[in-house]
Image 1 (cartoon, helix red, strand yellow):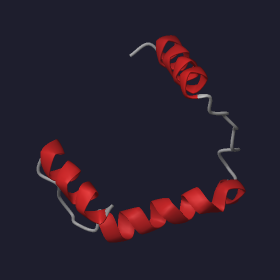
Image 2 (cartoon, helix red, strand yellow):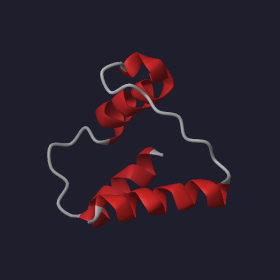
Image 3 (cartoon, helix red, strand yellow):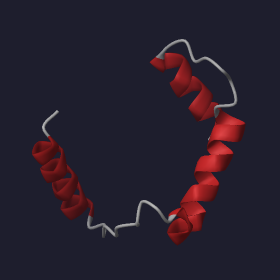
Length: 66
């Protein structure tokens, strides 16, 4: 996918939902500890399986975890 097209869609989605975008320095995950904590818990508790056979199974596992 074209990166410029992705960026335009992203900006359009932000404007449509009236959300603000803030950049996080890629080398400093501590700038957003809440999200880092969520990602860690989600990987550990929600996706603790070695293999997900297909996208449908992934959706079921994620919905159950949520």
